[in-house]
Amino acid sequence: MPNIQWNIIGIILISAAITFTLRALPFFIFRGNRTMPVWLSRLGTMLPSAIMAVLIVYCLKEVPQTITGTGIFQCLAVVVVAVTYKWKHNMFLSILSGTLFYMILLKL
Image 1: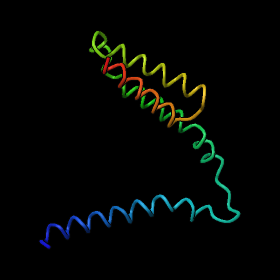
Image 2: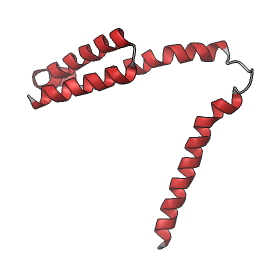
Image 3: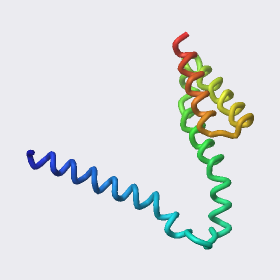
Image 4: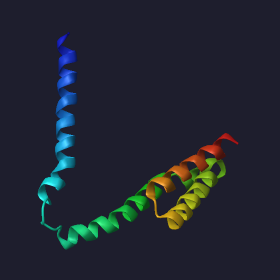
């Protein structure tokens, strides 16, 4: 194998090791009878809503320029996301339903 392929394999392995370590770290820190700090528990309850708000703002950042094109579709998709999230409290389902609804509107 050429040297470049070994470099790519090495980079992938290092990235995988770092990702695994970062994901496993909370399980090692809070194992056994250790409890999470109050601020971390509060962050865990508030973070999903904050992430959803950031995603909505990011998706709608160009709506004023494209309101006559796909801007209306984007606003309708946001409504679908909000209603689905309020109904089921499932972030994955609400993002999926909003995305599917938006894609269907684009194909019409």
